[in-house]
Length: 358
Length: 146
Image 1 (cartoon, one colour):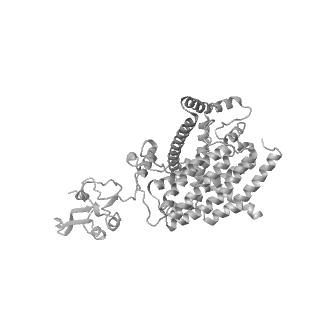
Image 2: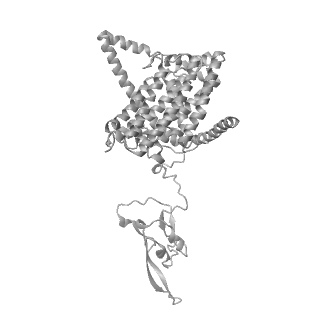
Image 3: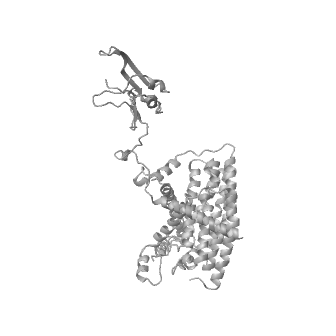
């Protein structure tokens, strides 16, 4: 498996030979920040295109086909259209919070995005409580959504924001519990370590039954966490126009939209990292030739393939089921997912203590 | 408690049934018609009302008897019939003869009432739908051959 750490170390030594170390580190931070934002935008564009195509396929349509080959430039044109639009300020809104809210959402999303280990040596934020940091960073986004609903002085926005607050805070618990189940199995919270421990088998195979249950719970809760799929009632189009971002226009709306799609990717890539082995190739013990072929595929391809597979799973769920009511959503979380998640955690502890895992 | 656990598995079962349906749909042939490219194979439904036509047989005569029922049935007044009285030289009886059957496509709302009213099936709707022209006057068509 190719280690990108060699390249980054080489860049670091080259820079330190030219300038003092502090300046070199500062420069590296700026470069990494720019790369991160570029990747963020790229992922957002790919996600929106994929959403339109996959949704179309599930509805027996073709989706965008006109702009560019297979409609591939459609989303880029949409982005430019969005950039040229006016940002309207609502008259009786809380101006400061109204303008701040989209940036809080996007900052939370970028911070969570930085945690994802893309390939060996391509981890940006990688320290011993990585998962904890990821959970904390991603839940800041709720504040942005609540502020957006509160400050835009519209009943629809406020109802949407309150619903999303109730929903996201509830489902945070299930996401946490299902990740904790895997942390029990790995005894580490560092993302790079979690991936390394899956070299001899992904956790969904190693942890068998409890890991599988945790994976399903994580998918359900993660889908609710990003306000998508059957849980999209914070922005229920048919009842609340657009929920918390009703009053937003132009690029402020665009930021919410982009953050929503990248959050979906983040949830999927964390699922891929924690349950499906991240950038680790598929290894079957005993088949050395097969393993060698799998090793030849670069890590980031493995990672993106797994992440987009989980994205596809979530889109499949989204375009299959009708929207839930708010009481049904809270019932599902508090009466089903949390008790099952807790029991599952206990089951995992038993499995680990008696060494029943592979 | 039994009901709760049973409910979970029943719920999961029904969710999986739904997901199987959409999974099959994902791979079925897509029904989207890509219009300008598929002109050659485009198939319109027989009952689609595109444009009013008056079929003529091989010697160029039509079945219209100029009774004016279609003109009266038309809610928009898109049909204008000009007729004259001619006397049949053999029998000596006079009967109406169609001179001009004018049909304004621009004000037609494709309700099909004129075809319903026609006692001799002299007019029918064709399925052609590419009607765009540059001036409205081109939309006023004379249906009978003179």
